[in-house]
Length: 71
Image 1: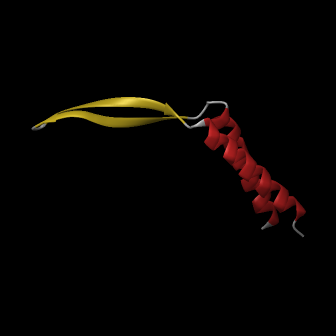
Image 2: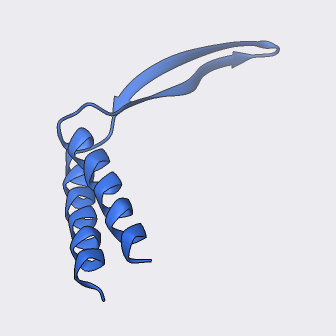
Image 3: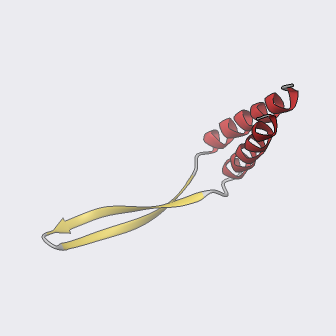
């Protein structure tokens, strides 16, 4: 369990750093018009908010430290 916490903490912190730096993007399809069987969609590219990356770094660091200190 101890090593699992450390590994999970490191992974969460790594994804948090990537999000904080603006490197994590995702696509979202949005339907803008629908008339009968005809529809038009737009694909939006968004980034994960930086504050969420900061929170993930703190949580990941906390998990890694807790896993390292647990006996």
